[in-house]
Amino acid sequence: MRDSKINVDDLDIRYPAGAARAWLAWLMPAIFFLYEFMIRVIPAVLEKPLQQEFEADASQVGLSMSFYYYAYGPMQLVVGILLDRFGARKPLSIAALVCGLGAVAFGLSGSISGLAFGRFLMGFGSAFAYVGTVYIATIWFPRRRIALISGITISLGMLGAITAESTLQFLVDATRWQNMMFGFGAAGVLLGVMLFMVVPRRPSWFHEDIMASHASCNVERPGALACIREVFTNRQTIVLGLITGLIYLPLGTFAALWGFRYLNTVLHVSQEASGAMVSMIFVGLALGGPAVGWLSDRLGRRKPILVVGSLLGIVATCTLLLLQPGHPVILMVNLFLLGLVVGVLVVAFPMAMDQNPCFARGTALTFVNLTQMVFAGIGQWVVGVLLDLGAGRGDGSHTRAAAEDAFNSGDFRTAFLILPIAMFVAFLLTFLVREATPVDDAGVPEVP
Image (cartoon, rainbow, N blue to C red):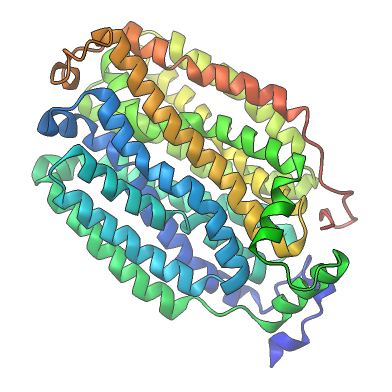
Protein backbone atom coordinates (compact mmCIF):
# COMPACT_ATOMS: atom_id res chain seq x y z
CA MET A 1 0.00 0.00 0.00
CA ARG A 2 1.05 3.55 -0.66
CA ASP A 3 0.99 4.74 2.93
CA SER A 4 3.30 1.94 4.05
CA LYS A 5 6.08 3.46 1.90
CA ILE A 6 5.91 6.91 3.49
CA ASN A 7 9.23 8.02 4.94
CA VAL A 8 8.52 9.20 8.47
CA ASP A 9 11.36 11.69 8.20
CA ASP A 10 9.47 13.50 5.40
CA LEU A 11 6.31 14.15 7.41
CA ASP A 12 7.37 17.68 8.34
CA ILE A 13 7.42 18.97 4.76
CA ARG A 14 5.00 16.91 2.63
CA TYR A 15 1.45 15.67 2.47
CA PRO A 16 1.83 11.96 3.31
CA ALA A 17 -1.07 10.85 1.08
CA GLY A 18 -1.58 13.91 -1.08
CA ALA A 19 -3.26 17.26 -0.50
CA ALA A 20 -6.69 16.15 -1.76
CA ARG A 21 -6.96 13.28 0.73
CA ALA A 22 -5.74 15.52 3.54
CA TRP A 23 -8.43 18.13 2.94
CA LEU A 24 -11.15 15.49 2.58
CA ALA A 25 -10.10 13.86 5.86
CA TRP A 26 -10.23 17.26 7.58
CA LEU A 27 -13.52 18.54 6.13
CA MET A 28 -16.19 16.51 7.94
CA PRO A 29 -14.64 16.87 11.43
CA ALA A 30 -14.30 20.60 10.71
CA ILE A 31 -18.05 20.75 9.93
CA PHE A 32 -18.64 19.01 13.26
CA PHE A 33 -16.64 21.80 14.92
CA LEU A 34 -18.83 24.39 13.16
CA TYR A 35 -21.91 22.62 14.56
CA GLU A 36 -20.35 22.35 18.00
CA PHE A 37 -19.65 26.07 18.13
CA MET A 38 -23.23 26.87 17.19
CA ILE A 39 -24.59 24.90 20.14
CA ARG A 40 -21.85 26.33 22.38
CA VAL A 41 -23.05 29.93 21.95
CA ILE A 42 -26.80 29.20 21.99
CA PRO A 43 -27.09 30.51 25.61
CA ALA A 44 -26.22 34.01 24.37
CA VAL A 45 -29.58 33.99 22.54
CA LEU A 46 -31.60 32.00 25.09
CA GLU A 47 -30.34 33.47 28.36
CA LYS A 48 -33.15 36.01 28.78
CA PRO A 49 -36.02 33.68 27.67
CA LEU A 50 -34.72 30.97 30.00
CA GLN A 51 -34.65 33.34 32.98
CA GLN A 52 -38.23 34.34 32.27
CA GLU A 53 -39.60 30.86 31.57
CA PHE A 54 -37.91 29.11 34.50
CA GLU A 55 -38.08 32.13 36.86
CA ALA A 56 -34.37 31.82 37.54
CA ASP A 57 -31.80 34.38 38.58
CA ALA A 58 -28.60 35.12 36.70
CA SER A 59 -26.38 32.89 38.81
CA GLN A 60 -28.71 29.90 38.28
CA VAL A 61 -28.79 30.37 34.52
CA GLY A 62 -25.04 30.99 34.41
CA LEU A 63 -24.38 27.85 36.45
CA SER A 64 -26.68 25.64 34.35
CA MET A 65 -25.19 26.90 31.08
CA SER A 66 -21.66 26.43 32.42
CA PHE A 67 -22.25 22.67 32.74
CA TYR A 68 -21.35 22.56 29.05
CA TYR A 69 -17.80 23.52 30.02
CA TYR A 70 -17.70 21.33 33.11
CA ALA A 71 -18.21 18.36 30.80
CA TYR A 72 -16.09 19.73 27.96
CA GLY A 73 -13.08 20.61 30.10
CA PRO A 74 -12.41 17.41 32.06
CA MET A 75 -13.31 15.32 29.01
CA GLN A 76 -10.31 16.77 27.23
CA LEU A 77 -7.95 14.36 28.98
CA VAL A 78 -10.19 11.44 28.05
CA VAL A 79 -10.45 12.71 24.47
CA GLY A 80 -6.68 12.84 24.14
CA ILE A 81 -6.29 9.29 25.44
CA LEU A 82 -9.02 7.98 23.11
CA LEU A 83 -7.52 9.72 20.09
CA ASP A 84 -4.03 8.48 20.90
CA ARG A 85 -5.32 4.94 21.36
CA PHE A 86 -8.18 4.50 18.86
CA GLY A 87 -7.85 7.24 16.27
CA ALA A 88 -10.55 9.75 15.40
CA ARG A 89 -13.31 8.00 13.44
CA LYS A 90 -15.31 6.16 16.12
CA PRO A 91 -14.82 8.71 18.91
CA LEU A 92 -15.93 11.59 16.68
CA SER A 93 -18.97 9.70 15.42
CA ILE A 94 -20.17 8.84 18.92
CA ALA A 95 -19.44 12.38 20.11
CA ALA A 96 -21.72 13.90 17.45
CA LEU A 97 -24.53 11.56 18.48
CA VAL A 98 -24.11 12.60 22.12
CA CYS A 99 -24.30 16.27 21.09
CA GLY A 100 -27.59 15.56 19.32
CA LEU A 101 -28.93 13.72 22.37
CA GLY A 102 -27.95 16.66 24.59
CA ALA A 103 -29.77 19.13 22.33
CA VAL A 104 -32.94 17.03 22.53
CA ALA A 105 -32.63 16.71 26.32
CA PHE A 106 -32.21 20.48 26.58
CA GLY A 107 -35.34 21.04 24.50
CA LEU A 108 -37.38 18.61 26.61
CA SER A 109 -36.21 19.92 29.98
CA GLY A 110 -38.72 21.40 32.37
CA SER A 111 -36.33 22.69 35.03
CA ILE A 112 -32.97 24.40 35.51
CA SER A 113 -31.41 21.04 36.41
CA GLY A 114 -32.76 19.59 33.16
CA LEU A 115 -31.14 22.41 31.22
CA ALA A 116 -27.85 21.70 33.00
CA PHE A 117 -28.09 18.01 32.06
CA GLY A 118 -28.68 18.86 28.40
CA ARG A 119 -25.75 21.29 28.39
CA PHE A 120 -23.58 18.66 30.08
CA LEU A 121 -24.29 16.17 27.29
CA MET A 122 -23.65 18.78 24.62
CA GLY A 123 -20.34 19.67 26.26
CA PHE A 124 -19.43 15.99 26.59
CA GLY A 125 -19.83 15.40 22.85
CA SER A 126 -18.42 18.76 21.79
CA ALA A 127 -15.18 18.00 23.61
CA PHE A 128 -14.10 15.86 20.65
CA ALA A 129 -14.76 18.34 17.84
CA TYR A 130 -11.85 20.78 17.66
CA VAL A 131 -9.20 18.49 19.09
CA GLY A 132 -10.30 15.64 16.83
CA THR A 133 -10.10 17.89 13.79
CA VAL A 134 -6.62 19.12 14.65
CA TYR A 135 -5.55 15.56 15.51
CA ILE A 136 -6.61 14.40 12.04
CA ALA A 137 -4.65 17.31 10.57
CA THR A 138 -1.50 16.15 12.38
CA ILE A 139 -1.81 12.84 10.52
CA TRP A 140 -2.65 13.94 6.98
CA PHE A 141 -1.01 17.38 6.70
CA PRO A 142 2.69 18.36 6.87
CA ARG A 143 3.67 19.31 10.40
CA ARG A 144 4.80 22.71 9.23
CA ARG A 145 1.17 23.46 8.29
CA ILE A 146 -0.48 22.48 11.58
CA ALA A 147 -0.75 25.99 13.05
CA LEU A 148 -2.29 27.22 9.78
CA ILE A 149 -4.79 24.35 9.70
CA SER A 150 -5.61 25.02 13.35
CA GLY A 151 -6.40 28.60 12.40
CA ILE A 152 -8.55 27.61 9.43
CA THR A 153 -10.44 25.18 11.65
CA ILE A 154 -11.06 27.99 14.13
CA SER A 155 -12.40 30.12 11.26
CA LEU A 156 -14.94 27.47 10.34
CA GLY A 157 -16.03 27.24 13.96
CA MET A 158 -16.42 31.01 14.06
CA LEU A 159 -18.64 30.80 11.00
CA GLY A 160 -20.93 28.63 13.12
CA ALA A 161 -20.79 31.15 15.96
CA ILE A 162 -21.48 34.10 13.65
CA THR A 163 -24.42 32.26 12.15
CA ALA A 164 -25.75 31.43 15.59
CA GLU A 165 -25.37 34.94 17.02
CA SER A 166 -26.89 36.68 14.00
CA THR A 167 -29.71 34.29 12.98
CA LEU A 168 -30.81 32.19 15.95
CA GLN A 169 -32.54 35.18 17.51
CA PHE A 170 -34.80 35.16 14.45
CA LEU A 171 -35.60 31.47 15.02
CA VAL A 172 -36.34 32.08 18.69
CA ASP A 173 -38.74 34.86 17.72
CA ALA A 174 -40.36 32.80 14.92
CA THR A 175 -40.84 29.53 16.81
CA ARG A 176 -40.41 27.97 20.23
CA TRP A 177 -36.80 27.64 21.34
CA GLN A 178 -37.53 23.97 22.05
CA ASN A 179 -38.15 23.33 18.34
CA MET A 180 -34.83 24.90 17.50
CA MET A 181 -33.07 22.55 19.91
CA PHE A 182 -34.81 19.53 18.35
CA GLY A 183 -33.42 20.65 14.99
CA PHE A 184 -29.91 20.68 16.45
CA GLY A 185 -30.56 17.20 17.80
CA ALA A 186 -31.39 15.86 14.33
CA ALA A 187 -28.31 17.56 12.88
CA GLY A 188 -26.12 15.86 15.50
CA VAL A 189 -27.40 12.41 14.53
CA LEU A 190 -26.77 13.11 10.84
CA LEU A 191 -23.26 14.32 11.58
CA GLY A 192 -22.50 11.17 13.56
CA VAL A 193 -23.41 8.98 10.61
CA MET A 194 -21.43 11.10 8.15
CA LEU A 195 -18.33 11.16 10.35
CA PHE A 196 -18.29 7.38 10.56
CA MET A 197 -18.57 7.13 6.77
CA VAL A 198 -16.02 9.80 5.82
CA VAL A 199 -13.23 9.91 8.43
CA PRO A 200 -10.43 7.51 7.38
CA ARG A 201 -8.61 5.09 9.63
CA ARG A 202 -5.12 5.94 10.83
CA PRO A 203 -2.53 4.87 8.22
CA SER A 204 0.33 2.49 8.92
CA TRP A 205 3.04 5.13 8.60
CA PHE A 206 1.45 7.10 11.44
CA HIS A 207 1.84 4.04 13.68
CA GLU A 208 5.49 3.89 12.60
CA ASP A 209 5.89 7.54 13.64
CA ILE A 210 4.41 6.73 17.04
CA MET A 211 6.70 3.74 17.45
CA ALA A 212 9.71 5.90 16.61
CA SER A 213 8.64 8.33 19.34
CA HIS A 214 8.22 5.47 21.80
CA ALA A 215 11.75 4.27 21.05
CA SER A 216 13.20 7.76 21.50
CA CYS A 217 11.55 7.99 24.93
CA ASN A 218 12.47 4.44 25.96
CA VAL A 219 8.76 3.59 26.23
CA GLU A 220 7.46 0.53 24.42
CA ARG A 221 3.66 0.95 24.62
CA PRO A 222 2.76 3.92 26.83
CA GLY A 223 -0.74 3.81 28.23
CA ALA A 224 -3.08 6.48 29.48
CA LEU A 225 -1.20 7.09 32.71
CA ALA A 226 2.08 7.50 30.84
CA CYS A 227 0.49 10.11 28.55
CA ILE A 228 -1.03 12.01 31.46
CA ARG A 229 2.18 11.85 33.49
CA GLU A 230 4.19 13.11 30.53
CA VAL A 231 1.92 16.13 30.09
CA PHE A 232 1.28 16.99 33.75
CA THR A 233 4.96 16.90 34.69
CA ASN A 234 5.83 19.30 31.87
CA ARG A 235 5.83 22.78 33.39
CA GLN A 236 5.75 24.44 30.00
CA THR A 237 2.51 22.67 29.12
CA ILE A 238 0.98 23.76 32.45
CA VAL A 239 1.90 27.40 31.80
CA LEU A 240 0.50 27.21 28.27
CA GLY A 241 -2.74 25.85 29.65
CA LEU A 242 -3.08 28.71 32.13
CA ILE A 243 -2.37 31.31 29.44
CA THR A 244 -4.93 29.89 27.04
CA GLY A 245 -7.57 29.64 29.76
CA LEU A 246 -7.13 33.30 30.69
CA ILE A 247 -7.05 34.64 27.12
CA TYR A 248 -10.13 32.59 26.21
CA LEU A 249 -12.31 34.21 28.91
CA PRO A 250 -13.72 37.02 26.69
CA LEU A 251 -15.09 34.40 24.31
CA GLY A 252 -16.31 32.01 26.99
CA THR A 253 -18.00 34.60 29.22
CA PHE A 254 -18.84 37.63 27.08
CA ALA A 255 -19.46 36.29 23.56
CA ALA A 256 -20.97 32.95 24.57
CA LEU A 257 -23.40 34.15 27.26
CA TRP A 258 -23.47 37.65 28.73
CA GLY A 259 -22.50 39.82 25.73
CA PHE A 260 -26.05 40.49 24.55
CA ARG A 261 -27.16 41.80 27.93
CA TYR A 262 -23.95 43.82 28.40
CA LEU A 263 -24.46 45.65 25.12
CA ASN A 264 -28.17 46.23 25.84
CA THR A 265 -27.65 47.53 29.36
CA VAL A 266 -24.27 49.26 29.29
CA LEU A 267 -23.99 50.59 25.74
CA HIS A 268 -27.71 50.84 24.88
CA VAL A 269 -27.42 48.64 21.80
CA SER A 270 -30.78 47.27 20.64
CA GLN A 271 -31.60 43.57 21.00
CA GLU A 272 -31.63 43.21 17.21
CA ALA A 273 -28.22 44.85 16.74
CA SER A 274 -26.56 43.08 19.67
CA GLY A 275 -26.20 39.81 17.77
CA ALA A 276 -24.34 41.48 14.90
CA MET A 277 -22.14 43.39 17.36
CA VAL A 278 -21.19 40.34 19.40
CA SER A 279 -20.51 38.38 16.22
CA MET A 280 -17.65 40.82 15.48
CA ILE A 281 -15.65 38.89 18.07
CA PHE A 282 -16.12 35.74 16.02
CA VAL A 283 -15.29 37.60 12.79
CA GLY A 284 -12.03 38.75 14.38
CA LEU A 285 -11.26 35.23 15.52
CA ALA A 286 -12.20 33.77 12.12
CA LEU A 287 -9.80 36.09 10.30
CA GLY A 288 -7.16 36.25 12.99
CA GLY A 289 -6.83 32.51 13.60
CA PRO A 290 -5.54 31.59 10.11
CA ALA A 291 -3.46 34.78 9.88
CA VAL A 292 -1.78 34.10 13.21
CA GLY A 293 -1.24 30.45 12.29
CA TRP A 294 0.31 31.40 8.94
CA LEU A 295 2.54 34.05 10.54
CA SER A 296 3.67 31.67 13.24
CA ASP A 297 4.49 28.93 10.73
CA ARG A 298 6.28 31.48 8.54
CA LEU A 299 8.39 32.84 11.39
CA GLY A 300 8.94 29.44 12.98
CA ARG A 301 8.21 31.05 16.36
CA ARG A 302 5.20 30.91 18.69
CA LYS A 303 6.05 32.82 21.89
CA PRO A 304 6.05 36.39 20.47
CA ILE A 305 2.50 35.81 19.22
CA LEU A 306 1.30 35.05 22.76
CA VAL A 307 3.14 38.05 24.26
CA VAL A 308 1.73 40.55 21.77
CA GLY A 309 -1.74 38.97 21.85
CA SER A 310 -2.10 39.14 25.63
CA LEU A 311 -0.87 42.75 25.64
CA LEU A 312 -3.49 43.68 23.04
CA GLY A 313 -6.02 41.81 25.16
CA ILE A 314 -5.40 44.19 28.07
CA VAL A 315 -6.05 47.15 25.76
CA ALA A 316 -9.21 45.64 24.21
CA THR A 317 -10.84 44.55 27.48
CA CYS A 318 -10.11 47.86 29.21
CA THR A 319 -11.57 49.72 26.24
CA LEU A 320 -14.71 47.57 26.41
CA LEU A 321 -15.24 48.49 30.07
CA LEU A 322 -14.52 52.21 29.60
CA LEU A 323 -16.47 52.73 26.37
CA GLN A 324 -19.60 54.89 26.65
CA PRO A 325 -22.85 54.61 24.64
CA GLY A 326 -23.03 56.27 21.23
CA HIS A 327 -19.81 54.97 19.65
CA PRO A 328 -20.88 51.97 17.50
CA VAL A 329 -17.87 52.08 15.16
CA ILE A 330 -15.38 52.06 18.03
CA LEU A 331 -17.35 49.25 19.66
CA MET A 332 -17.30 47.11 16.52
CA VAL A 333 -13.58 47.68 16.00
CA ASN A 334 -12.86 46.86 19.64
CA LEU A 335 -14.90 43.64 19.56
CA PHE A 336 -13.13 42.68 16.33
CA LEU A 337 -9.79 43.29 18.08
CA LEU A 338 -10.94 41.14 20.98
CA GLY A 339 -11.55 38.31 18.51
CA LEU A 340 -8.07 38.75 17.06
CA VAL A 341 -6.66 38.49 20.57
CA VAL A 342 -8.42 35.17 21.21
CA GLY A 343 -7.12 34.03 17.81
CA VAL A 344 -3.54 33.96 19.08
CA LEU A 345 -4.44 30.79 20.96
CA VAL A 346 -4.04 28.76 17.76
CA VAL A 347 -0.28 28.79 18.39
CA ALA A 348 -0.71 27.25 21.84
CA PHE A 349 -1.83 23.91 20.40
CA PRO A 350 1.25 23.21 18.26
CA MET A 351 3.40 24.59 21.10
CA ALA A 352 1.91 22.05 23.48
CA MET A 353 2.45 19.24 20.98
CA ASP A 354 6.03 20.36 20.38
CA GLN A 355 6.67 20.25 24.13
CA ASN A 356 5.70 16.58 24.37
CA PRO A 357 6.66 13.31 22.64
CA CYS A 358 4.60 11.92 19.79
CA PHE A 359 2.70 9.35 21.87
CA ALA A 360 1.35 12.12 24.14
CA ARG A 361 0.47 14.69 21.48
CA GLY A 362 -3.26 14.12 21.72
CA THR A 363 -3.17 14.37 25.52
CA ALA A 364 -1.11 17.58 25.38
CA LEU A 365 -3.46 19.06 22.82
CA THR A 366 -6.52 18.28 24.89
CA PHE A 367 -4.95 19.53 28.12
CA VAL A 368 -4.60 23.00 26.61
CA ASN A 369 -8.19 22.85 25.43
CA LEU A 370 -9.26 21.63 28.89
CA THR A 371 -7.98 24.75 30.64
CA GLN A 372 -9.85 27.00 28.20
CA MET A 373 -13.15 25.29 28.86
CA VAL A 374 -12.75 25.05 32.64
CA PHE A 375 -11.90 28.76 32.85
CA ALA A 376 -14.87 29.60 30.59
CA GLY A 377 -17.28 27.58 32.74
CA ILE A 378 -16.06 29.16 35.96
CA GLY A 379 -16.13 32.58 34.31
CA GLN A 380 -19.77 32.27 33.24
CA TRP A 381 -20.82 31.35 36.75
CA VAL A 382 -18.66 34.03 38.42
CA VAL A 383 -20.09 36.78 36.20
CA GLY A 384 -23.62 35.63 37.07
CA VAL A 385 -22.83 35.66 40.78
CA LEU A 386 -21.29 39.14 40.59
CA LEU A 387 -24.30 40.43 38.67
CA ASP A 388 -26.68 39.01 41.28
CA LEU A 389 -24.66 40.53 44.10
CA GLY A 390 -24.75 43.89 42.39
CA ALA A 391 -28.44 43.85 41.48
CA GLY A 392 -30.02 42.07 44.44
CA ARG A 393 -27.27 42.39 47.00
CA GLY A 394 -27.48 38.62 47.38
CA ASP A 395 -30.95 38.57 48.95
CA GLY A 396 -32.57 36.48 46.20
CA SER A 397 -35.40 39.01 45.68
CA HIS A 398 -34.66 39.76 42.04
CA THR A 399 -35.15 36.30 40.55
CA ARG A 400 -37.67 37.34 37.96
CA ALA A 401 -36.68 40.97 37.67
CA ALA A 402 -33.15 39.98 36.69
CA ALA A 403 -34.49 38.94 33.31
CA GLU A 404 -35.60 42.53 32.69
CA ASP A 405 -33.81 45.53 34.21
CA ALA A 406 -32.38 44.58 37.60
CA PHE A 407 -28.81 44.88 36.33
CA ASN A 408 -27.42 48.35 35.74
CA SER A 409 -24.36 49.55 33.89
CA GLY A 410 -22.21 49.54 37.01
CA ASP A 411 -23.11 45.93 37.79
CA PHE A 412 -21.92 44.78 34.38
CA ARG A 413 -18.75 46.86 34.36
CA THR A 414 -17.81 45.56 37.81
CA ALA A 415 -18.52 41.94 36.90
CA PHE A 416 -16.43 42.11 33.74
CA LEU A 417 -13.37 43.49 35.51
CA ILE A 418 -12.31 39.85 35.48
CA LEU A 419 -11.40 40.23 31.78
CA PRO A 420 -8.57 42.81 31.95
CA ILE A 421 -7.30 41.16 35.14
CA ALA A 422 -7.14 37.81 33.32
CA MET A 423 -5.35 39.36 30.34
CA PHE A 424 -2.77 40.99 32.59
CA VAL A 425 -2.02 37.71 34.37
CA ALA A 426 -1.75 35.97 30.98
CA PHE A 427 0.70 38.64 29.82
CA LEU A 428 2.92 38.01 32.85
CA LEU A 429 2.79 34.24 32.31
CA THR A 430 3.94 34.53 28.68
CA PHE A 431 7.41 35.43 29.93
CA LEU A 432 7.67 31.95 31.48
CA VAL A 433 7.06 30.29 28.10
CA ARG A 434 9.94 29.19 25.89
CA GLU A 435 10.04 28.03 22.31
CA ALA A 436 9.89 24.25 22.38
CA THR A 437 12.97 23.44 20.28
CA PRO A 438 15.41 24.96 17.83
CA VAL A 439 13.86 25.61 14.44
CA ASP A 440 15.28 23.92 11.36
CA ASP A 441 15.97 25.57 8.01
CA ALA A 442 12.44 24.90 6.77
CA GLY A 443 10.94 26.80 9.71
CA VAL A 444 9.74 23.60 11.36
CA PRO A 445 10.05 23.07 15.11
CA GLU A 446 11.77 19.75 15.65
CA VAL A 447 9.67 17.46 17.82
CA PRO A 448 11.76 16.20 20.74
